[in-house]
Length: 293
Image 1: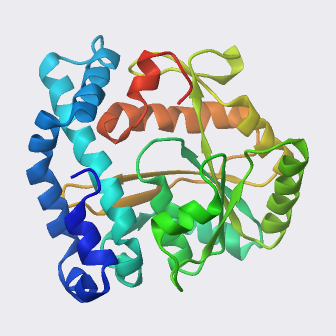
Image 2: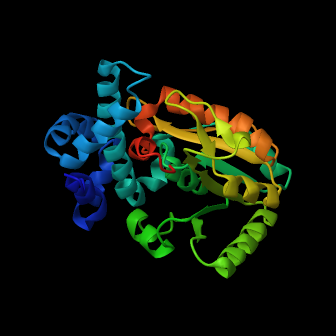
């Protein structure tokens, strides 16, 4: 069940891929919702995740609300895997199940010949869908992060003509990071969009503090400094899904590439999304353990 075999069968096995494309995407979402209670009951990992959600939200939510959020989080995590598996087979018709709000904020910068940073919360929502959906619409997108290497990402998301974005991994030594920084500069001078995810920490400088429903956290100072070095406009971006499984990408108006402005404006938006969509966060174990998320 963890590998979502039905979705993989319909979207990665050639004999079944035509069937996978014919089935509306929201049908898969309703299937995930129907099997989630069984997963929550019999999966030790799912029970552990639910336990941490209840601990993290114990002071801010009722026991009944904690349970609802825990169930929603399980659906979110399974649905995120489903979309990743299905993407190669449904990318061409992504506009049918991806809603893009605030695109004018991106096109305005593109027409002005400016690059931009698309800033998302790390481990929140469906941020990986933003770079793929926007690239599918013709934007030049580069995603940077310290996660798995590009080859593994290609295997996970599929490899084909739909893959119109580039991944830059900066989890290396000093010189490797210097080379990646140079690549970022080159990308932005081509009027491309650089997507970055920013982590939260349990401790940090008062200047980076964000107030949130589960308690304060501090935005990653290294990413804030990187944005100040790049000196291009910042577009806050959050991706959640609606009750039919459609991904809703919301791009907010640009911010100045200043740590102070980003903490104040992006931090406030991030706190609002965590309050309104706690089930879309994959951070609760780290919040309880007082680690970065």
